[in-house]
Length: 223
Length: 291
Image (cartoon, rainbow over all chains, first blue to last red; front, side, top):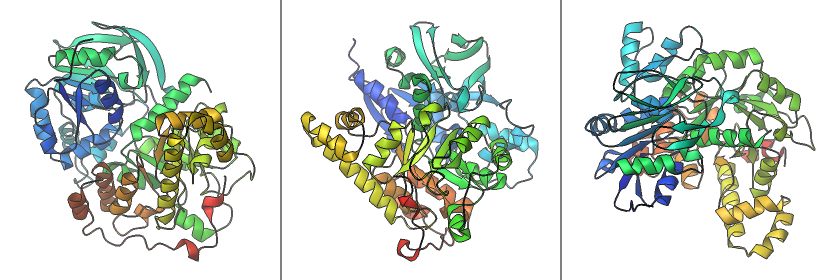
């Protein structure tokens, strides 16, 4: 195994399963630091956006003032791994889950435009809903794409460049569409669940909940 | 329940960590909670403070009301069933609830047995006052634990007592010699394997939240500093003067639970906190339900 001890990874620690990523990365020898405020963004070689609830993380990104600086770091090329909610934060576009009622759009806007008075137009809502996300990864992600917790599942499938990977899907999203130069790394049942675009890796599933460190090791090799 | 499903169910609780789960009674409250940054909501007909005030038998909520809340938000929705009432749990599983709380807040349906949670695919969270209760619930299939606290009081003292006790017992197990664990498991009335897990790992095998009486951002941060991995807020939000603002402040306090400067700012101008009642003043001690 290569020596990753000079690599410092910042793990976004606003909400969710960030500790699990830290365990994976430190077991591989990397140094981890938790990102909660602006000063935590200094001197990073890579960033992990963990699983959790994307609505919560998105709001806290704004309230903490991390949103713009983090977005700039990622846009400037800092290696970034986003899993599940992290993928949703990276995505340029979000489509509403089919299981939601017809006005899922306005639900979404409720989530992301907390300060907005109710009764604002759909167009404004739409703008807000993208503003809440980092939007650095040119893909369209469907939230809760598989449905509720009873539809969560585990599988093992090949990922380009890594080989077979155990994949834990928990109330997971998948990627509906990608722009031209996004590399598709894995599909499950025809749905895209892993992509790479320049410095960014986006995954629907949770490699941090499996015992297989290959995904994290590959990420470190890119840092 | 197959092992894979149990791992997925424990995994969902891991995704909720560092978050706040809020009691809501209507779709409108659910949206306020989601907008304020709740990582999940608990759908129930009456919040614990009102259950306490109303008295009588308290049961699972109307499935229609729960479904209304499921339709209103995209975050996970939890609901409560009575201790031992496995049919209420079957009903909640049938409407695809994301988590069932087998809860002492409702009137127990069985004064001896808890639900065999291994017979379900849907995950369960259960309350515990100490390590023994926690590990017994986990042995029955719970995928997440919370302190019991004393619900509906707005008084955090019981949650603090339960969290401190549980963590003290975890440390005790950790410091024991292996051959002492057999007796420790017997004393705790738990299987040896679970006692051994705690001894080896220094923590419960599932996520552990705080619940019961949390009413302010400082209360929430207190529970986090005492070792909670997240917080349930029941009556504290929608029994207060400005629910949306209080809810958002508690969410931020849980994320930044060691940042006293920020918590000071978050605690400003929140309006009236839930009035609260002292546990000594109440007749019904819910925490004693289901041991």
